[in-house]
Length: 222
Image (cartoon, rainbow, N blue to C red; front, side, top):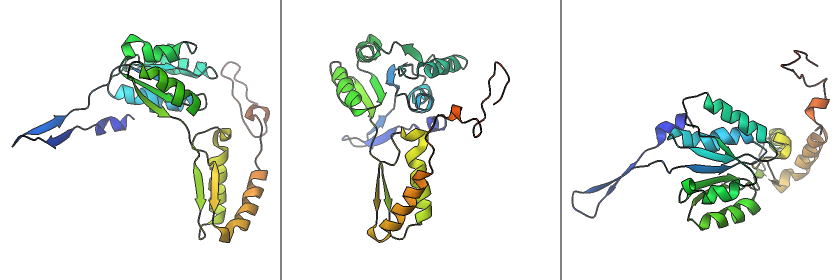
């Protein structure tokens, strides 16, 4: 988003009047309220919420997920150490949805929400409608993988497995469905099954032989 700040451009369009033209400028929309999910709180905060707002020196108030509130607060501390505006004001999760849409500074501005369809598609849009507040919703998806008949099957298996289990499978762009050409279906299924059977399901912190953990307080590793 820092690099993309260079790419905001206006438009020049023809006018109905002879020799005239219209100049279209892109202006900051105003204070933006952001609602974050728990699965990628730091990434989404900096890239999808605060990043675009900071490009135009806009203020951004966001709701941290109740599952990952500390990350949002730590991010706010980092923002406070920069020359950026205090873009990461934190609102109480219990109150933020109504405040985001009805708070005077955001009336008629914008709400950006990343999360599930039931909350974003219904609750947020319904609340925003009272003030005709703009909404930007990213509500996940059912990302398919397509394996053609001439595909590199081993590469397809590795890629689909990685896409399926990234972030323990809790990401909107994980491969949810796989469509395989019938000519290679049996071979693909056999290799995909074997690859998934090798996947270890566990909490990383309880696997000391494969993970190295470091404590800043004790300077101990295990």
